[in-house]
Length: 112
Length: 111
Image (tube, rainbow over the protein chains, first blue to last red):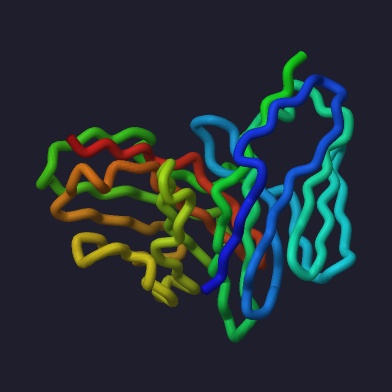
């Protein structure tokens, strides 16, 4: 069974204080690893897809990296508007499988 | 594009009543997903469709839940009869590739 574990559950940062969120996964074969951002009362918003170990993607202050066992979401010099829950999900390889298995997320709070 | 549209945004109902949630996917997307989100269990896939055909319904909790997709622009998730433990936020998502795009969700409260 595919499993995704995110840590920490919650993270509080000061504006400008860089840090990383972790996503550990167990999957029979990885087709893709996805990062989403979710604001209170809204649906998850797609950020990145990573497909193979060593791959990196960046968007503004966010950079996602991938190894064979985990992914990191690095946040550089965060701003209060980066406060949200960040969700990680994996998609297993095999046939036409499009199912995503999500972790429970990391709640990030950035204080001004 | 307006994105994925869900209705209603909030639903409060009494135990035993029928509840119908609605979703309009992004035009041109051929995959549609229904998820449920709770504090305890996080975001869970209930069922997904490809070209209006159900592909995997293994996440549907029990026979009280059913989903249909009569055409490419509309899907429903029905709960009959509803129970308090069904209280959650239900999301619809659509996709034309590996990346899924979510709607704003329906917050369901069953009293």
